[in-house]
Length: 151
Image (spheres, one colour):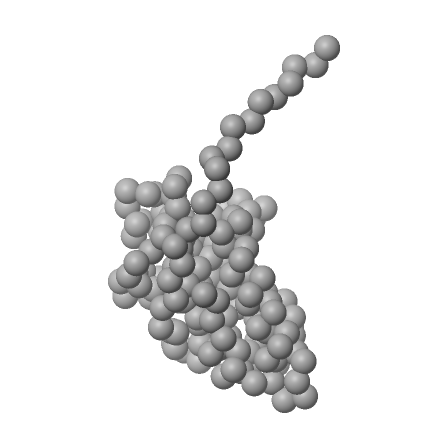
């Protein structure tokens, strides 16, 4: 007889979402979301993350558009840097820091991690906004995409 595993989950509770000012650097336009984050992180953190974007921002297959999710989590802080390429592909670099040291950011080596349920809501919204404002039009409306924010 096999032993039954008893899982214990924390009951789901929606987390606070913040939308911050877009970041513009080196030809990139990046929307910024925070989960359980009241204030936009300091310039050093943002500079570190934005330096991880590929250059040049504008190529035949890269459009200088993306979004950043900064999630002050329970077991760590997560930084999900995303950008659009090859028409409909979202690229990601994932970073983390310890709960007690927000700015001690390091890349996540486990490339099997995508996102948690709280972050996936943003991914769904961003995907729909990209389809609506860029992929469904003869001429993409990049500014309309940037103006569309998840709330």
